[in-house]
Length: 329
Image 1 (cartoon, rainbow, N blue to C red):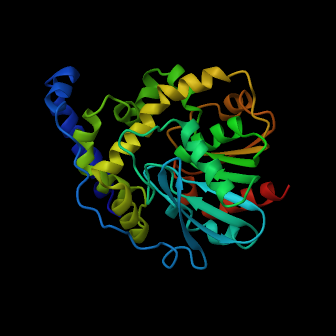
Image 2 (cartoon, helix red, strand yellow; image 1 turned 180 degrees about the horizontal axis):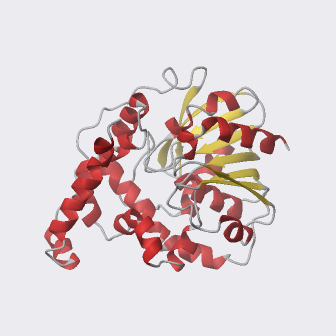
Image 3 (cartoon, rainbow, N blue to C red; image 1 turned 135 degrees about the vertical axis):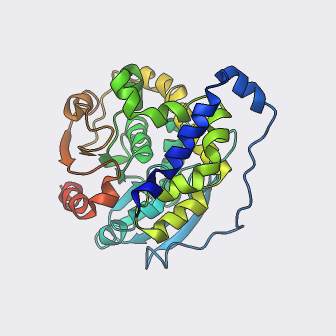
């Protein structure tokens, strides 16, 4: 894919932000205060991904905590829950899930606010609520204990799952995140440069939605790189104003209610055996992963890969080689 096309959403965002800087944030918010986000036209039901990406899997739609959570499930054996990142969906696991399904029962949901799951406008996007969605989903599927493999936003949810439901999570794989509370407590110029989109997406509604929301489809598609089919699916599910707003609410929770929850149990270490993987070229790669995560998890091992943030897309074979023996231990 042409690099200029990859950068297009960010070029547009830069132009919009430069224009917005001619007014104060307060003036911008007042300007949009009485306007509502238009979710736009969406198909009533998007086509299943099971034929395209996950042959042999089945679609699941369950009402969890008052909203619809969509997932796919396939394979047989011990249950493994796969939690995706942003602005992706269960589709990000298309290279791993079929392989894992040879030995495990694989459940890959869309988190609330993403993919084919509901995107409540005023919903609770705390990681505690999102973790509760997942524990309730697994219990409805009759799985009381399971392992979790996660990336990005899904890893923040997995971390809270292991904290709130330690008896349920048997193994945990976290990929390319630093605990959000740690990041917020260590913001400096270097971190701000690397987390510039975090800083933007967590601004008060409706500034991010109005400025970047119109480019949500291009941004979602960009994360798939040259994988056109996956990119089109991300654009269809996460490329609406409704979906972009939900993603912003997820990020906003990280610097508000999620910090409160983290402070309430900061002394309690995670006991779940864990594997932490990250890309050394990622925006998180300059953090001291071992030091930070050893303060969070008692039993943890580490793997650094020569990749960027989207480690599953960039290094699927290396990820599979790492997590297969870990899940068997």
